[in-house]
Length: 226
Image (cartoon, rainbow, N blue to C red):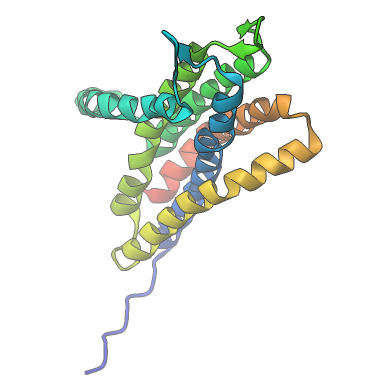
């Protein structure tokens, strides 16, 4: 038997799809910057961070595992916080939550930029204090904990029923594309500026993205409707 014709999209449906696509662009930017944690920052940790403790050398991947540990610890805490917030009059929209996550990510690049400039260096070896790297990973974990669940919740809530699977795929693709573009973005910045400014550029990009999210907040709320 022939498949029933799908219902045409209403104006509200089109606006909701557009709002999801707009936020997906900001997701690409977020994960593009976040991917530096496993690439340029890991290289930085290997070559420019003091990693010796009690005569033993700590591998860069062990320091990186602090990110995963932070996610595990912060996950339940953040879940309790959002549940508490939902019971109050303070209601944060998806763009505002994404902006908070982006600001935390931007702050993490401030920390690593300070470390990259050698402001906390070991003068004898020119190595930076690992505390700054741990602070970077912690802020990144906070940002990811906030950012990661938002998109899928937004898609599930506002996507037209017939488009939920497709738009979920779009969101997954945006996340993957952001991670893929991270390396290209780093190389492009290095070709134009000194590597010293790499993390400062990522800070500016993410901070501007956060401002953009706050700017379009009312527009997105209006587009998705009640």
